[in-house]
Image (tube, rainbow, N blue to C red; front, side, top):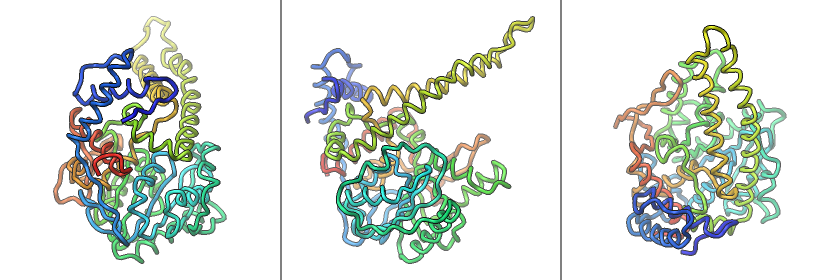
Length: 433
């Protein structure tokens, strides 16, 4: 395996050595020793291929097939709910060979722009346009980098059908909701891949949703879904309504990085040189990632600028006889903690020279493509409830129609991450397919 070098010689191999150390197969590496890093990189390849022998399901004519886990089955149509962030695009590319033989309804959302043309161009590049129908759903005020919308332009002509845009956001959402209802009811075994907040599926009759098996990336998507529910509902009622909604599916896989591979898990050239070499052959994907990460750096840098004011506000008024209090320092600690998380994300982006994508929707795709059960074995059927902070709590329950992807400790997280990345390799024909 020839490591992909990005910007500076040895960056990729040094990162690979660190990744090998994370897996427990080597001592902590020296980033100043390219020879050691190169050897570790080769050892990582051997370990992955020998110990994480994976396979992906073969594409099947007229069916999308999931081999393992709660989503296992054969499906005659796929509803794809996506906001077209970079990890969405990569997940769709991973799944493309398996989706070409079935009707595809793409519901777009988030951000203030019409994404239909971008989706059409992306699907054409991935060979998914011939049986695709694209509708713009609920938009939002979320940031959307200007350069991203044209990343897939200039390629092959798309044959996807673009549903006419509504005159306003409410009509767009209503049109998308009708499209979703018609699509799910017109197929015997539909699958719903939910990579954005699935606003357009809220309010669908139970008889519509319980026809579908689904896979959901949670985190922001479920938080945003709750926030857009009826204003008359309090936080607890919204959580209950969300739980009822997700339990309406015939079966559902719920994926969260924080529960499985860790909230900071990413796909970068150092630990995953073969995967990134594959991406480099698709300039549109690389530009999508670079444009998105540039916007993220700018946005987080702007938020960091407020740290001084937040700390000063927290610690003001402590000059009197009473002095400063623990609660004031606690408030300052919250501000610093947020800043640390932002710096961590920024550091992850810059150390990889912008070539970094969160292992979120790509993890969902790995679950669906896992032919050997190496990822599916981390699924746990669970009853879902929420705590006082509206965070989901998954309690093991074999009767539940929902399964969560769960790794209980650091060792399991490392193994799940390694297995899922190996599935990515196999999906691209780079590993043990």
